[in-house]
Length: 139
Length: 114
Image (cartoon, rainbow over all chains, first blue to last red; front, side):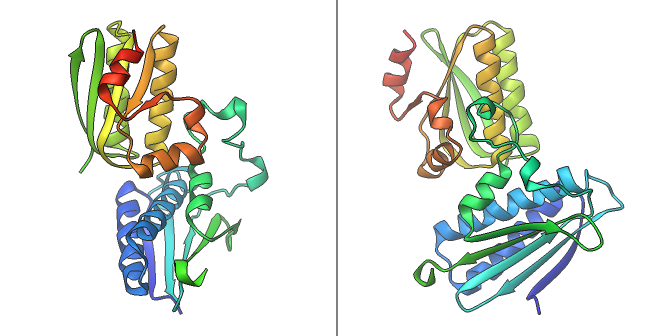
């Protein structure tokens, strides 16, 4: 049972709302300031992907955010109602030919800042991103 | 707080002092507009001072890369000054340390354009 379950509009205000809600729960788990920064950034990047690339700012589509606290971890699931994507089709932002691309670094940063990261097709559609951050002392 | 930008000249180098957050939306777009204005005015030596920037997301990083390309394509140079540990970490993760010239000291940065 998630500690937070939110259905948010497809706009940039929702990015702030989701980040603040996740950080609120993360405080209670006991993450350090640096871990909170990393978690906040991962949530922000994932929310931007959901709003901008997934739902494409469509006012009829929502972003579902759930946050679950554990004694040593925080689990965040962010799901959009977009067309979905395959990780294998995402250009590698670290490849020499992609270094000067303006976009495409969000997933890289998410993976750098959380301990577990999974992307799958949502039900009935869209993309569902699951992120887990562990307390440093427990990982 | 979004980003606040102000420009000043040190010799023939234009220094852009930035403060706040460079993130998707207003922060990133004002950053882009400022750089394009300078490039269009023919400024060739641009130093971005990030010492008061508290937060940059992937969109902000994208704007810095885009700015670098814009200035380079106009025959100029764009360098970075005063990165926090967090911003340095972002450049490491994204391998952009291999793209940008980065300085901790403004005088050294200014001299490097000569």
